Image (cartoon, rainbow, N blue to C red):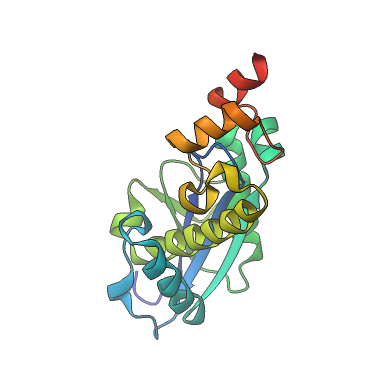
Length: 189
């Protein structure tokens, strides 16, 4: 694909009990240092924040999200595709092809290819993964300042032992996904 402009697209937060699902679309510029680009889950938090800043300065990127209400209303699969669609739509530069991590692309998107474990194999998808994860992590940290009992500054909304314990003790916030079993079970008692 010589001279074709490629955009990587990835999402984060599908498995969380709280907070939005976030997607990012990235087109890398030639100035990017590709040695930093790998699966975001393998990069420690502080390093990931720095790398995300490097990516943002050396790419065209856009963030899309789907809210907790949209996740509960449409389910996480459809909300994820919605967040991807929003990121893709906001991208200022238009690529020839969107490379999307996983097995599904937004239905309206014609010029796309899905790649299983793309965040481990394709640099522009890795970059999208890093930016999306850094964005969502920082969002959950800010949210955690208002709800410190849920430990979101460490677990970022995932269902850790401490988060589940806090749910049982303090109840459900409007930032929790009520359609997710652990949250739903607490609401059903």
